[in-house]
Image (cartoon, rainbow, N blue to C red; front, side, top):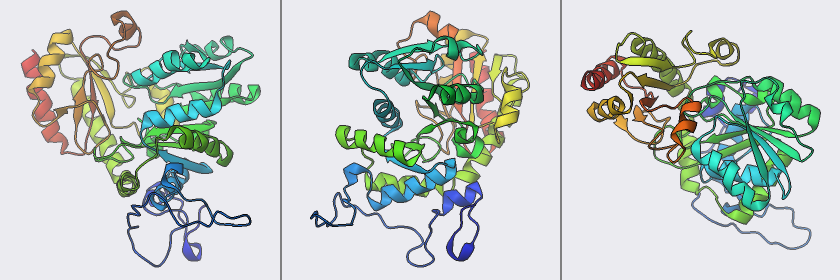
Length: 391
């Protein structure tokens, strides 16, 4: 259990989100923004101080929020970066070399999929996508050059949930790394490190920041591995600005109450959508109809604020539905206090062949909904207008 000043327990997740693990009992309640790129340092032989430079991710604002994130994920250390894709890219570049091989779930965010299947290949790194529903899929695709296994929990945008424990066991047996992107879950609902993951990645732009006003990413892992990612950060430069780090710290302070409200609202809306004739299918891990509901009940502490609906009228109905909304807004991001809708065929998975979208569970007519903290009755009223328009 983490201890604060004078032995005060700091073990609850909401407490960790508010207070850093080594919180001070004096000084400002809210840390100031240290808007400095560099710091005085002698740099002579024998100097014991740290070489502080914001590009290295060790500005005081960066390190304060990183300590919180490590505590939330139950990991040894964390590093914040300029975006979720920066976190993903720097992690994979730290773990993989020319000639190495990566195995990833085929259920991936569009940009992550392109990074893995197209960009890494330019650096001599091969990749294989597997169906994570197949219990033997990961092992069957192993090569002598395999160094990393990669998955999302839950997946974007189809909200599938696959058990990471057998994959983690395989990674441990083979001496390789399991990397999990847990952006949709947040540490409040799921902590992959507790299930065997070696590295946990977040697009902190989403739920961790929570107010749609910053770009950030996070990598949580062992101290040694985080330092390897930091070396990539030094070389490629996607550092998080101190002001954005301060905003992220501010956002974390309300993570507990925001996520609890989003969990509650999303479950209520998912149950309501199930009763609407215009909706062919509702995708939400908290529903008994979801294929992974038993697993979600086992390993998640809340079902999350993300959901999907498949409109019976297909793509045209989805277009009409989205345009008719006035409270929920069309936008490509997620995780904020406001409710946002998007069609992945136009945004996160634009450019993928129609057949591949269908195989991934993203047919025309699929609408992703990031549920906010508004009054759920108001959201129902707004979505009812959208459904009536799409009829």
